[in-house]
Image (cartoon, rainbow, N blue to C red; front, side, top):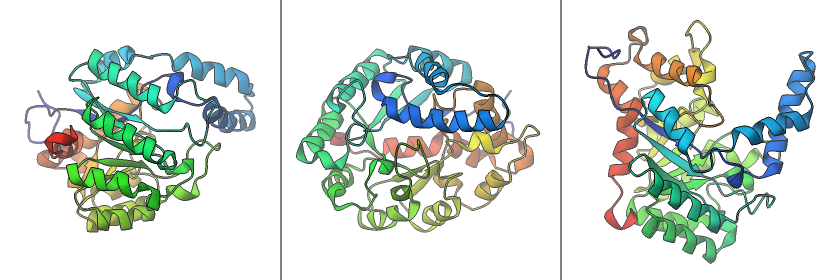
Length: 319
């Protein structure tokens, strides 16, 4: 039986925010920055752990280079499909194993290896210029990718003029553009990753669905306003798992789901950063909990319908 209010069939689950758990796509300096924060927290709590030990653990966890373990985890969680996000760190943090061109090729191979289970939103730092634009177009038209992933903490804002040709292409084919919002590894800058920088591109390029990654919890008030008043702006739930306490309470999510934008919210886990399956299941359980008062139709939209609608809206050449 379904655990969705109204006793309807259990809805499809699409993870709209995930990454391949691989060191091939993640710079060492990015991981070192994350490790610095963890080390400070553990040391203050009386549990000193060396930075190198934390990084070693990261590298052990980031060894699913072909996505096989992710598929197994998806099956256990009842996730039918996942969007794989490939941010391009290589311009800002060049200490990464592969070039962005090679990363595109690896993601193409993963897409083929697990046919029907993944969609890829691939990123190119706009400062690569025409070569970067050509690579992105090749990813869409030859590799079968489905959208653009931007990572402003690398040093550019969503309204950077260098993004104009990328936006024009995405606008022509209704390709989704997902942007990181909020803090990240301290190796990068947080200032460019504010939601408000998306306002002008969203106004100009109305055929592009702009997805504010982590918008459920980062810069929430601004993200809600953009989703409410810009018809082509959405946000995802990645990171919101940690807003739910052990008793199942989450005031920040209650505020979100009462904001009349459930048609703009996309389920996402941020795998493998959030790879604790019990925590990810807690997010789904919160959504389908009758006490939250989310109707059956909205549950379907949140868990898969909104993401599916954006993917279905891509015009043929943009597939």
